[in-house]
Amino acid sequence: MILQSSIPISMLGLRRLSSTVPRNITSKFVPLRHSLTSFAIRPRFSKIRAFGVAAVAAESTKCGDTFFAEESISWASLGVSDGLARALSEIGLHRPSLVQAACIPQILSGVDTVIAAETGSGKTHGYLVPLFDRLCRNSDNSEKTLPDEALSKSHRTSLVLCPNVMLCEQVVRMANCLCNENGEPLLNVAAICGRQGWPVREPDIIVSTPVTLLNYLYAIDLDRHKRSNFIRGVKYVVFDEADLLLCGSFQNQVIRLINMLRFDEKQLSRLEASDAGNPSASDQNFQEASDGEDEEDLASDGEDAEDLAVDSILESNENIENNGNFEVLESKEQLVRRKDWKRVRKHYKRSKQYIFVAATLPINGKKTAGGVLKQLFPDACWFNGNYVHRHNPRLEQRWFEVTVDTQVDTLITAVKNGLNLSPNSSSEIVRTMVFANTVEAVEAVANILTGAGIDCFCYHSNCSLEDRTKNLLEFQQKGGVFVCTDAAARGLDVPNVSHVIQAEFATSAVDFLHRVGRTARAGQRGLVTSLYKQSNRDLVAAIRQAEKQGQPVEKAFSRKRSFRNKLKKRVKSFMPELSEKF
Image (cartoon, rainbow, N blue to C red; front, side, top):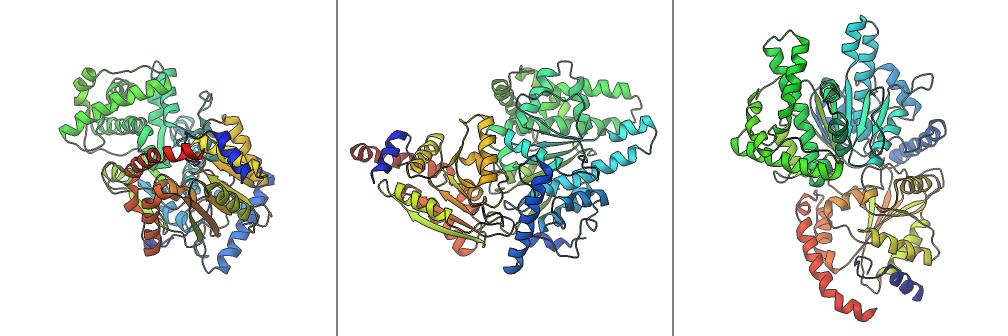
């Protein structure tokens, strides 16, 4: 049984050897995968992606559906500048997708925006395009102004937060492929993550992880001048994979950053309201007030929520100290004494725009990512893709209930059948992704496939970043079999995956949706083969029932913990039987 870590990897291997867009357009989204790969070499891979887009268009026409907006809708009609529209055409995006056509005008209007759309629907360019348009126009306008005015107008930074380094670097590569007529990137976009230091010249768009950004703002910036200047210069903030950032281990760090950004907005609004005309005094006031920035109440304006916010910040301090190695700045007593800063202004003039992007965004319950967003940003404009949390009709699914005795043979048969599938593009490359739940299970699956004569790439957290990058690029270029954990299920742009196999069934409906979203992207068809055991029956039944009824699978989202607990109990009950078999 691959799932059970108690079974040695070698034992599994030996066992195998033995045997202008109208508002209603938002309700009619169809998928479009990201229009760029993760490849860094632009001229060569732009041509590959252009062929991919052409293939998608042909397939969409044949199936009577398309991920593109109507032909009458162009980049120009959405308000995108000619130079940026030309750069988009150069990488094969001649027209916007439906998701992009719906959200770009709203982002350009300056309102807070939540984009909840299925994987492969073009969400990354859905926020990159309006950010580029805004920043490029600001840059052009600054050249026509006096030097002092240009300095103030050009200091508009966009911040993109991603959950991991791989996604940060992918966003940067996608952004840097948008070039002018001379082949130079339209904007300076840089990733600040891992061991990379703060750039000498501040980029137009900074892509980072929450912990890394907090590390730099606190640990390196001891005098806090950089922190206050940076926060004040940020005008656009994007949370990519927002459901992951707003829940679990990322939540405290993200809330801390939102607190800092919102406090700056409150302080600026207060200074404007009081007609403060002394810039130096304003900076000094902001500097002194920054000590209390983390106390901002993000849940509600009540007193109980204020106490909760203090506890949240203390926990945030502890988590960031453990992960980021910088000191805790405030004690609970100090935070409580500074509560009066919360009452600076409850209603204030906004100076930043917030954009949240996710393929899964549960809203059932106040503690879900969607529930948190509805509380924090009640006036945000939401866009929901047609297949978000739903079965993609282009996706063929095959289900196999397996046992310890049949799992390995079923897996190998599924992989071999997948390698015989027709490729999803004209490149004649077939790509299969095989998911397992743990690092140990990934290694076990890799050993099993290797023993069966099937070469494969591995991708999991125990691999070094260099190895993960190398394996991912080789898989993108050469195709084959890619064995991975859920680290590869979110956001990574792997084009033309024709087959996804769950060697172990996902432990939650959210993970399931992200896994199957690796295929059937951009209007293409895809195949998912799911192997599940008796311990997965409840979750499988909930997902299949939702699929049969054409309903979203939100009802299964809240069952993650109960499924895992039930899984643990059943695993323990299987131990005696397994020990007898092996």
